[in-house]
Image 1 (tube, one colour):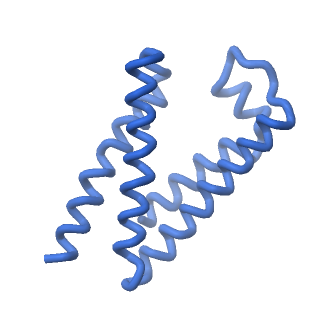
Image 2: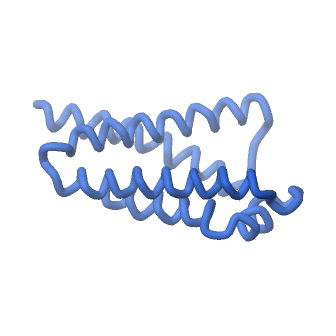
Image 3: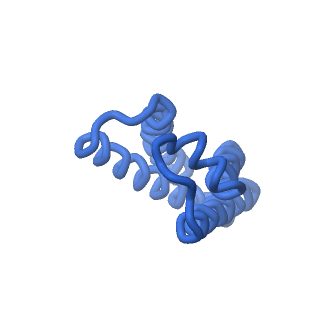
Length: 120
């Protein structure tokens, strides 16, 4: 969960610290972001950072560790489901986003294994 904290915070900061940089770097064919797009990216940034802080707390709290693992599993499971749906509907994205599919897909069974191991 500590690794997830660092990873999600970096990704969140990439989204929201400078929406215009994010658009130039990752959405090459898009016009610069307007107020609404910047607003959404900054909200997503803080959502990611909040989740990361929750996972960091859970990593060091025995009472909340399982809850943190469940939330991490649901988060990655939801993202990878959406990404796979997009691959089917829209086609294969850039290599970085394909890498995200494999990372998120590997986290889900790891979370399930951790939960089962803790409950034995």
